[in-house]
Image (tube, rainbow over all chains, first blue to last red; front, side, top):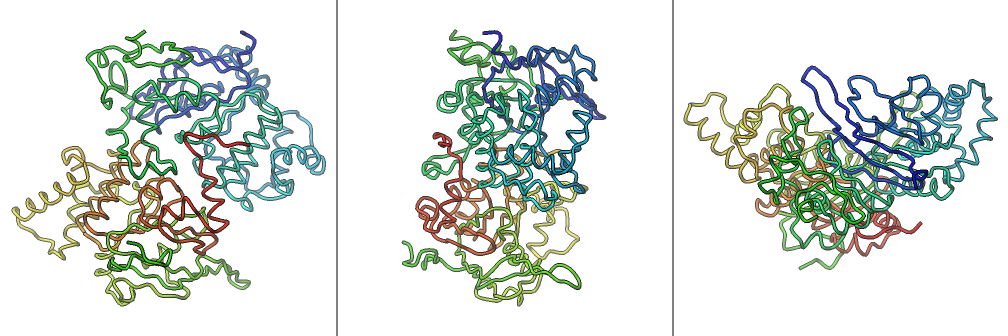
Length: 328
Length: 280
């Protein structure tokens, strides 16, 4: 059983330090991801999804700081390693992070294949001629449903969705065991979104990537892509469970309200009253005491304000809400 | 009661905006010029209190159409009428009293040095064609109007007045811009991707306010979005654009649930569902 764990985060905390104070973006988050799983991380903007993913890579640069906790990636404790060891043995090989703004991640003066050759040279120390790169990657690209002619193009010749897919295709060439995707679909329109989701499915099907963590604020995307969903609110994970269960029967009030505020293309949206969540997420410089959702929660009780609910196991789900803590 | 032709305006409604065969080419380069199609033969009309959504992928020409309606770019050919009069025949100030817009990024729509009071009071002055020097009682009266408009859209005046834009959330700011529209009382509102920078949890509150503005104040609205679920939620009619052309236009229910054109079918099929998983 233990061997099946791809990634394990234990009490992971991170903060941003700036002129306006210390923002505790992620606080004591623990999470286990098994091999072969696609985990979705959902929540409003500023809830710490991206920070959490960055902390999982172990490459933490100011203004972000690692405060405590450990991450185990395929058995390697990454916060015990020195940076050089981490870069050589874990980053890219075991865990790979694709950032949010892929449009800035490509070099505008290089063709895609030249960019890949650069990347490979950095990894292996060898030089790769253009033809060789084309030969190596053509097969990988076609497996993912991408035209191999993309390799000969410059970034500005590609559309937004194409750039995103090309970047994910080239970063998965080295077959990292865990792929972290930060908001992969948020800048794309529906048709490009669908193509991207199809490509991520293909990565799974072709067994190129076994484990994936995808962060997004759009739960409908996670429904299509993930087996499990983790909901984050104000730097904490409040609910984790099977994707279908969480969406159809949410335990935490925040999850329920988040899902009810969505507007999928379904007929009921026009007849039922949809209101969204009143208020705004808390300022993480001074988060509220107790349950962090209590100022916006309609089910708030006396205990919610003074005491923080623990993340407890209920069935095959983890939930951090006093409503459920009391029952069990 | 719907008109017999799909896509045509309900005849019982008073027509506010009419766009006829609107075409726009963008020309790039100096010597070797290149024509890029922005919009081609776009025709549509919006009635009083009606919401028409313009839906399409990025680059399909939605914003080009909205900019021509807002008079920020000139069409290559075609005509736009507001209440039956060519929009170029209106004096500029008069036109912007009648037509207002809310854009995607609320942070750039505000002057960072202005407080919300100033933004709203200025709007009121603009609406009333008022003089700059006002007596104390007049300003107090104006403040009352501002407060009531904020309350109408569900904002507490104490929480938002006197603040700068960095002290407010995106959803609050978009709603302040809606309150500003309420003060101006335009006949037509162009809402261009207003919710794309707001969180999913507060998006719907902005849409509810916009929808109320159309229904209660009788404002015609051109709602531009790439989110098809939102388009269905808010609009009476929907127009789907592809490569600068409108490929399908008609009542929201019909266009989005029983699309006829191949492109509209593909677009609607790409929308991820919440309670159903795609098969790959």
